[in-house]
Image (cartoon, rainbow, N blue to C red):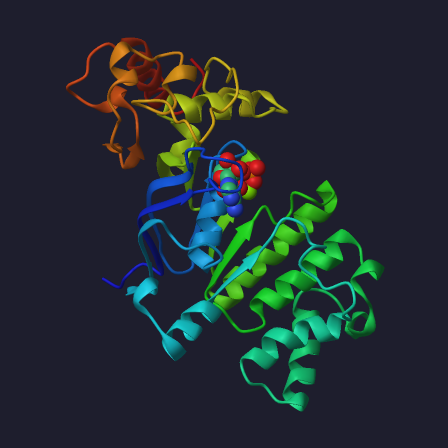
Length: 345
Ligand SMILES: Nc1ncnc2c1ncn2[C@@H]1O[C@H](COP(=O)(O)OP(=O)(O)OP(=O)(O)O)[C@@H](O)[C@H]1O
Ligand SMILES: [Mg+2]
């Protein structure tokens, strides 16, 4: 079997900010995160603000150095690569950020912005011109935009230019960090349609970060749910949405606004999420979610759960450790949910 295109193994990223603001404990932004994405697939990454989603993407792309752990691209561990091999891997992965404006130089025309990545792979002037027009057309803009400056474009058009830049060097992996959340709803749908077309045409692999649960449900093959630097649940998108096991996933999904009865039937009944996500400088002992979990037992404050295999999903919750008793309420609820095929309890 071929290697997954991207394999993240036990990745940790802590930010040590002491020195800047006195001696504070480090920010444990990402702690022991592992996942794989096969070529052509989309992994959706969801979770509350501050849970570490962007930090994962920025560490994969090389904006941050990992504190520990390994990132493999097509089987090759990135941290041991040098020279041309490292440059090749770096150009194979590109990132699209949330804010379409901040990534474009306001003093550069769209043509010049698109020339930057093309020059970096050694294309000559004539070839750059041809490729720039091709790229613009590919993202749904015509040559009229070449001589415009970013401020002359709408948010959606700017994001199209950012996507054109990202695909300019024909990468295999795109890290999409909330690429549509700064845009109007009608524009969001068009950008998502564009990303879907590009994925099919170029066999692209996506890590798709979003707060929009309906979007991830429609767009991602697999979904991973982050909380305080850890993945709490990871499985196929259908399974995570139809039969969520982790109390955090259940609480997150129960907050999705529904528009009809059919959607209502899919919502797991769960107590809504209360309180704030704790500081990543001072993570709770045991299960990181236990202070907010309606099912927490005394063991949850002591024992840090490993990810358990539950019907093909990975779930980081002691309720699924066969040795640990005291979760009858959660088991009853999830068992009923599974036997009802996702219907509400
Ligand atoms: N460069 C940095 N230095 C110090 N702390 C940081 C840095 N970048 C991120 N953090 C902290 O790491 C934690 C995770 O941040 P991150 O941006 O990865 O979260 P996120 O899940 O992407 O949130 P959001 O949904 O709001 O984008 C937060 O507590 C954040 O304040
Ligand atoms: Mg983020």
